[in-house]
Structures are given as structure tokens and as C-alpha cells.
Image (cartoon, rainbow, N blue to C red; front, side):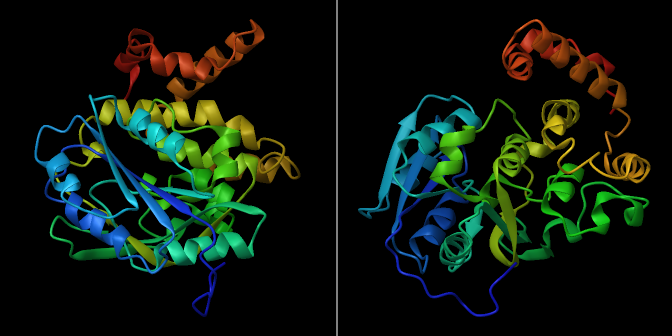
Length: 323
């Protein structure tokens, strides 16, 4: 699952790094420099400033490197900004770096090497360093093996008992951040980009990727995930809980009969029960899934996207959310 020796690879393949930038003047310089300092040099860096109101754009424009392109736009939201960058990308490999996170200098080299040596794999993530506002390491998140977002009382009965990427991804978003995915352009062309989610577009993308093909976890901390007072996930808990329920309603079916409910029904019922934590919002999952299934029977396509794009429809359910 990881390289015991540092891999040796040619640099014939380009990787496109997308930085969606919004009001991160304190962090963007370090983020950009962490890309420019990569040991793997065949990259393009596309920075899209999403209508920042601070000095973020000016700082990004102060860098001069032929591999770097800075684009400014009116505010259009994180998922749209990322997708615009991915659409502009020309690399065989693609990745995203949030403007408050940083890469370790060997990150691109090791991730590309893994993908080249494992051509059946289309997405890799890594262990991550959790860092604070000043960059001090607060701990190492080892994928699904520690720092769970919520307690799992009976791990030995849940999906966590096995080192299965898909089953552990169904339990929680152990990838943790959009910055922690390196993937092939083939994958992006097949499954599309980020969807209209504020907190969980990375989790949704990873689940769709896992349905398409093999994904892997490199067991080395190759990026820094910054925790600070302005992190998106800290701003609206009700919206976040809605998105968790939406994630399961929109994606659980992808793995039924392939990863869950395929052999021992009694055991798998127990595993699923012990693995899925909706934090008291089980009713909302049932409502969403019933709504999606009814819409599909009526011949509608992608009803799960309609409820994301229709603010009034989505927020009509917020009063039922248990915080």
C-alpha cells in the first residue's frame, strides 16, 4: 500500500494542481510555495481566485513561474471554482490544494509513482499532518485508523474491522479534505467534478471514484491540513448534518451487492448498523432516499442534484435536523 523505498520515476507525465483561492491572505503564499518546491517538477499550477476581498489575489500574482497561472473571477463557490480549474487542466494527473493547506515536498512524486506502478488505481490519498494556524503539527491522521470524526462504539463489529478502503470511506470521510486526493484525468472525465456541496464535495467525489475503480491510501503523511478558526466545516452545523445524510442517500446504493449485502446478510446488517452514524438524523436519510427513488421511477435524472441546486427545497428539510 506504500513504498518502502522512495520511488524512481521519469517526469514525462504532467500533473495539474488546482488551488481554489478565497480570502486566505495569511496562508496562500505558503500553499503556493509548497507546490513550487515539489521534487516532481512537471506540473502546472492553476490558481483561481474566487472573488477574494483581502490581499489573496495580489499575493498569488506576485509569484513568477512559467508553470503558474492565476485567474480571477467573481465569487462562484468552491465546487464551481475547483471544477473550472479541473476543466482547464492539461495534465494526465489532477489534484487540488486548498489555499490554506500545504504539500510535503515529495507528495506529487510519491502519489504519481503509486498511480504509475498500479495502473488499476485511479485515486490515491495519504496520511496527513494536522497543523494549526502557525503550521505546528497537532497530530498525524492515518486514514481510517485514527482521529475518527465521531465515536464508533463497536469497531470490531463495524466496517472498521477490515482495511477496506471502500467500507471505511462509507463510515466517514477519512480523506478529510479536497487537498488529499490525486487522481487520473480519466477518472475525472468519467465521473465528473465536484458537486454543489459546501462541506462534503470531497467525500462525494471519493465515493463516486471508488465506485468507478480502485482507490488507495499511501501510508505516509504527505500534506498538511490546516485547522483554524475560519475552516468551512465550523460555520454551519445544520447544513453539514444535512450533507452527511445526503451523501448516504445519494451514494450508498453504489456499493450494495458489491461491497455490502453480497454474502452473509445477518453479519452485513450488523456491520452496516454499527458503521453508519447519522448523529440522530436517520429520518432525514430515509426521507431523502425515498424522494430520490420516487423521482427516478418518474423518469427524472439525477434527482439528488436537484435538491442541492434548489435552495428552498433543500432548506425545507432543515427544521427536521437534530443538531
